Structures are given as structure tokens and as C-alpha cells.
Length: 240
Image (tube, rainbow, N blue to C red; front, side, top):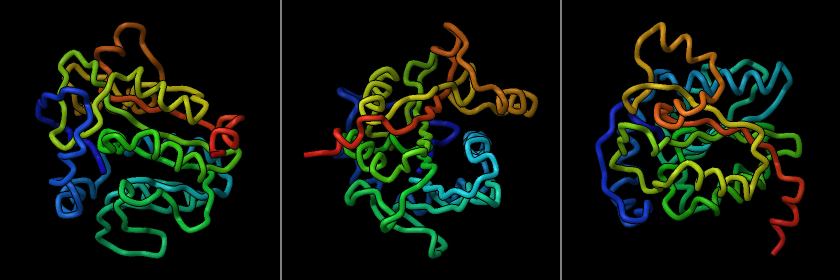
């Protein structure tokens, strides 16, 4: 799953539209995923974050909503890639095709040192807390969860028609914090328009910029990355 560079405005009452999911299942994503065979800005930045977290150590990564698994080509050799998505074009042992809103997020009995979900949680409707809980169970004790989320407070807000989980950034952050310790968060990129940076020099500069700019980021951040670790009390949270 992913966010397009350009989106259409959408009115929403409460931010969740599970009924709209009926039109955005495997058939839709089979076509949509093909738009992201080549790396785009957010994916390249996600790869830089992942490689920096790994720092040369052998680790397993789960890419939730992997699309065409383009990220795999951008990772260092020590990062062992696994992906799940509703539409997989090139089946492989390290890829699972499943509608992970209908079934729990998992990959056999594996735990992962890194789990990535970029361009995913805008599409999960009312399943957000459930999916956070499932991901928490898959994260190794010293693992990191990296997740992106669209900035719906942007000055020129645009909302992709397939989004089913629309909320203020603070609401998303509070939900995330109930399942993970948030180590830090920062804009994926800044842009006057609500889309990824397009100019080459701007992209290069923002690829290396992982910081919040007071006042400016609130209205010009296109979306945010959150880097999280397991909560110390996660076993208690998981108990019935």
C-alpha cells in the first residue's frame, strides 16, 4: 500500500470509512502497486532509516504493505527482507499475499528486529489499534518499528480517495504510544503542496533532514515518520 504523489480532496465525517474498503481490495491494489515499482522519495528515505538502524548487523525486516517489494532493492545485504501485501505480483518465499485487515499480521512464527509500515495506516479504517497490537507481538525485544502517517494538518490538505483512516496527527501519535515507546518522529519531507518533494536539490537536502521545524512542520510536513521500540510493559498489555 502506498500514497500517490497527487491526491484528491475527500470529505469525511469521522475519518473512518470501512464501507469504502469494498472498492479497494486486491483488484484495486494489483494495479495501484505497479505505480511504485521504481523507488520514490519516502521509500528511499525509509531505506536510509532502516539501514541506519541495522548498522551492519544481521537482522530480519518485515515490510507491512510491501507492494511490489521495491524496498528490498534498497536495503543493505545484512537486512533480510520479508514482506506482506494484499497483492503480490511476483510470489517468493519471503513474500506473503494476504489481506492483513481480514487476518492477523504475521509471518509464521518469526519475530523481527525491524518492522516497517510506510503508506499503510491511512488505509486501515477502524483496525488501527488492532494492527498496532499485532505488530507489537512480532517485534523483537530490541527491535524497532518504523511507521509513516499522512499530515492531515497540512496547509493545503489533500486526501487520497482510498484513505479510510483520517485523523489529526496527535490522535495517531497517542494511539501509537499506547502500544509502543515512540523514540522520535520527524517529517518525511516538507512541501508547500501536499505531496512529496519533486525538485532534485530539494529532495537531496530533505533526504538527510530528520528534524521538526517549529511551526513550519505543522503546516508544511507532507507526512511523518515515527521510530518506535517495544514498551517495557507490552507483555502486560498483551495479557487478556
